[in-house]
Image 1: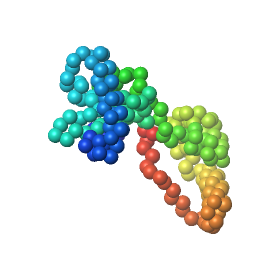
Image 2 (image 1 turned 90 degrees about the horizontal axis):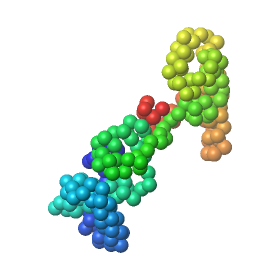
Image 3 (image 1 turned 45 degrees about the vertical axis):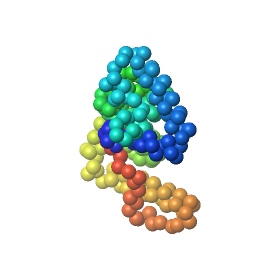
Image 4 (image 1 turned 30 degrees about the vertical axis):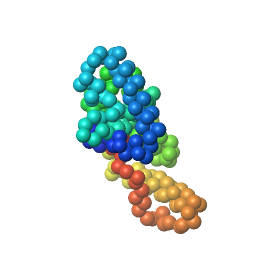
Length: 199
């Protein structure tokens, strides 16, 4: 997340009670980290306060994201926009300290994987219709399908491809669950929304 208030924090007192050895290790990691911080930036108390794994205050808290940042080899923002945001906002100090740790490997939905390879009949129809497979790496080329939207032959082939996929899914459901489903049914299968920036 890129919202500071959404980052997990745990009371030191609770961790000391439930996981005393873990808390000792966290204190040791924090001590070593603060030594490294001072070696790089000098005696900057404001920076130490912002970056310390242990958040000082009326109730001391362990900042889990800070612990993860310090202890991890690599930090990944998942989507490129998140990677840039965390480097410029909530983890700006850590990025300044460890710029090589911050990387980006999007695990989002890619046309190559989720359309081109998972649904070859649809891929083939799109390739034939557009006359190219360049759309796999340039999604804007799919705009070319709009001019075929009213073409009866294209519509028939599109429905045929969809029915093939539904028949394949129905067979898999029967195989795995022993349940017969109609291929005339509307299948609405979604785990979570797929943001455009992850496509």
